[in-house]
Image (tube, rainbow, N blue to C red; front, side, top):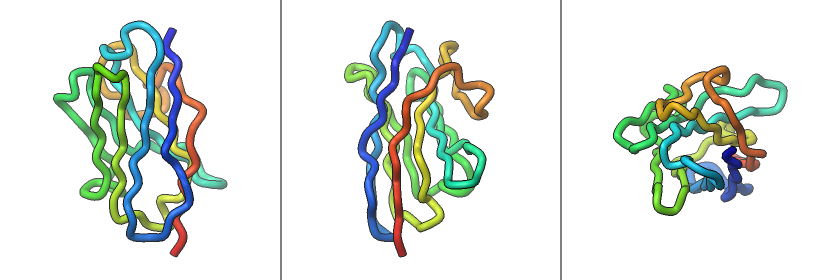
Length: 124
């Protein structure tokens, strides 16, 4: 069983950068595909970015492409989400989620386990 813990959220001004971390504890985390999702108040949880177990492939939603970068360090059992040029519409709780087969979880239904989330608030 793998447990995920997100960190790095906070309240920032628009235009700045922030990096979120997702630490996995449990066996075989380094073999799992990991995704980041977010949920804004009153909205459904949506896909943000994902990475394969090896880090060889990444995928981004159109709303963050070019501004966010997902990466991982399997020796540290950590997946990162580097967010640049943040906008007020990026305000949400950010969750990381895993997929045991190693491919990228691109939909909520493909994520098999979740972290508790970290709040990101961007003010204009």
